[in-house]
Amino acid sequence: MTESLGKHRVVLEVCVLASATPADAPVLAALEQAQAGRREDALAGYRQAATAPLTGPAQACNLAALALGLDLPQEAEAHARRALALAPGLAQAWVNLGVAQWRSGRRRDAAQAMARACALAPALEAAALDLARMWRSVGQPKSACTVLQRASAALPRAPRIQQMLAECARLAGDVGLARTAALAALALLRPMLQPTPTVQDMPAPATQADEAAGIERMRAAMAAACDALQSAGIGHHLVGGVVLGIVRQGRPFAGDKDVDIGVEFDADRAAVAAAMAAGGFRAIEVPAAAADPRWCMGYVHPPTGIGIDLFFKQPVDGKLRICLGWPDGLCYELPLHGVEHVDWCGRTWPVPAPLKDYLAAEYGSDWQQPCREVAGHSFDKRWYDNTLSSPSLHPDSVPSAVNLGLLRLLAALQERRWSKALALCDQLQARHPLPQVAALRAQLLAAGVE
View 1: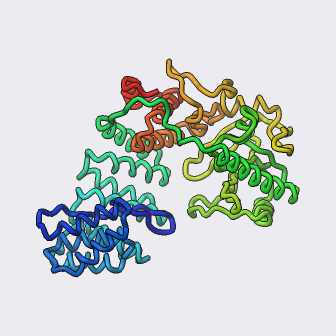
View 2: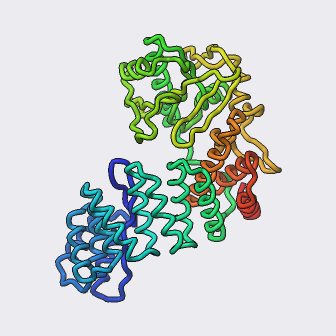
View 3: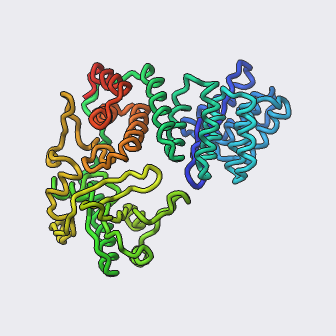
């Protein structure tokens, strides 16, 4: 059972104990109703169970889990403490106590309770994952790695522990540990997979009206950003997927939710920030480690919800270097280019010049094609991962880009998005062949995934 928590949407897990006592059945039934989204039924069951005589620490622990599912953290804490009064060594109750305290904003108390759960039960997966999430949410990924490395000794066959270790190692800048943990997670997860043939597992297509509305939101955000920069005299041009979409198919790709804009490297960052604020844009909150505007700055256009990413282009050795910044520090080097304009939606837009040369450098010589073939398999380029597959990726950035691709692959497998997973396997093998990825690719192809 999970729930979204906190400012940064930390997802913490609670613990539910199985019970053969008939008196505990109403609590377990209410938990099932809560997970199914039947809140009123779950709340009625909870109120009835909470007033019944307590059968033991397991029931109190489960009542705490149920109260958390019903967004009643203070009541959840009371139930967890009742469980611990009866069984001080019940690690699952410490987990639920920690989640309740986190929900109440008492982060230090929550971390201490979760650490107590880890000490009592090193093989309790929920405790280790929750404590790591807590450390990660407060900008301490190295501490999260320490928690997960200890847990992996007690849980050597737990793919989720390895996957989160890879994620936290990435945030901590430990490329080697991130690679080792990601491949370990993949090796553990692969035997559990049951891939099925799919034509494609793209999101359901939007209606024509929805698609038109989405394109209009993109146009409005693009126009507002370009107008804000232009009014401040800041040179700029569109880059990335929005340019590819307009040139290749006459409009941005359906579902795009952000716009990339290239800006001269010597642009005054304070002037850029002032221009975007004047244009009504809201700066994206980032961790302290990422608060470096040297390479990029991120904004949201509140009226549309569209993100605007500004990338500062630095001339280096006859090329233009662009860096994505924290946490991966991925750098790309493109040919020097000027600015030309394309017409779309009743307006001219600044884009790199020569445009076709830029698109080939960014997306490959087959940029006009909707599919790419790799080793006999053709994948839909809607699964194209530009951070991994762009020809302009700097060689020094390949290890971090591969790690990011592996994490995206693990997420696709857990979501059972088999076509996306296969496309990521293709791209990983084209960039940096790995035997673990080759084995997964063969497994997906053998299952008939397209």
